[in-house]
Length: 266
Ligand code: FES
Image (tube, rainbow, N blue to C red; front, side, top):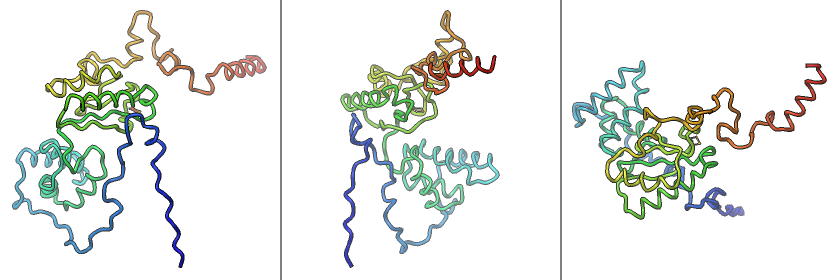
């Protein structure tokens, strides 16, 4: 039998284009290794024999009481454990498993799937810079690079700075989640303040967080300005999207629509 040579592995195109270094691998390490079938089947740790932090147990039990099926509380329960330990060491997984009456393997399969849950220590602070489509159009990669450079230059510790997929706040592009707080729109000049505030334990960029009372999205701020255009009257250009991206709003489309209306006698 002739063996067919395997095709050479290539870097994905976006890794070659990345101006701030190779992309972070997205696959969970070990996903392609076969399961070890010689291991004993997973067992549920006995709650009475597991040393569970009282606050953590109370939080998990509260979360479980909110759902008809206790499994629905897995994500908040793992988040609570991660908040306590800074990451999810085997001890934390065992504690959650004992309270929820599930196997550690079940929890581990979920923790290894979600990006915001860490089964290795990555730092108690997190700076997730969104570099998905909308934010990328507003130089998110440069913002990410500037924060990373500043963190490295100043030796910021205990902090994970990384790119992230769309965080669902595209209208504050480019944006980041800093310890869970959404801030934006960001600029490369914000990097120094973001890093300094994490080091000094301050809230980064007051007034520019989604939860801040005085925060306004860019189009809301434009609307509130004297002579601003109300949002329902604003076109895409007024909302900061640049020239129209909608095919039916291009000058050509509008001219065609005008001709059709005249033909219809409207
Ligand atoms: S693309 Fe950045 S928040 Fe959606």
